[in-house]
Amino acid sequence: MSLSISLTINGQSRDIAIDDPRVTLLDLLRERLDLVGTKKGCDRGQCGACTVLVDGRRINSCLTLAASLDGADVTTIEGLADGDDLHPVQAAFIACDGFQCGYCTPGQIMSAVGLINEGKAGDDPERVRELMSGNLCRCGAYQGITEAVIEAQKVLVNEKGRDAA
Image 1 (spheres, rainbow, N blue to C red):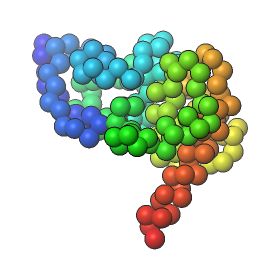
Image 2 (tube, rainbow, N blue to C red):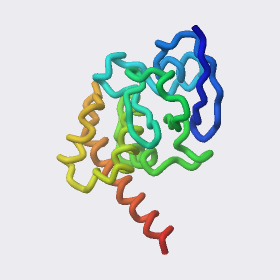
Image 3 (tube, helix red, strand yellow):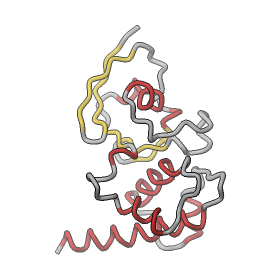
């Protein structure tokens, strides 16, 4: 059974034929669309390596059937930077040393972007750690990750303030 869905992926409209209605968003992104920044970790929704934004909300793409997203707006790690200009969360991860091996980093960054967009990040490290707890880092870079989320949120709040002026 073949079906067709329309997605906006990183700002680009795509009509995609799906041969198997059981294909996950993660497998569609990695295997069909060559967007391999989104990682396959546990493939069970427990590690967060596959986190992407769908309509601005963070989701585990390994648990989401692509066929269920017809008409959705999907943002992956490849869609954050603007050319050579890093997204503030990406820049903060570098500045705060928020990664070690880097495998979980795309999911961590996408979760952080979602968390900040939800307006829940705040400046409390414990709150940030709790709200990022769905993203695991085997290397234990949690201190840098937490600092990066708080730093990026400050930058984004300042940017919004300047845009409103």
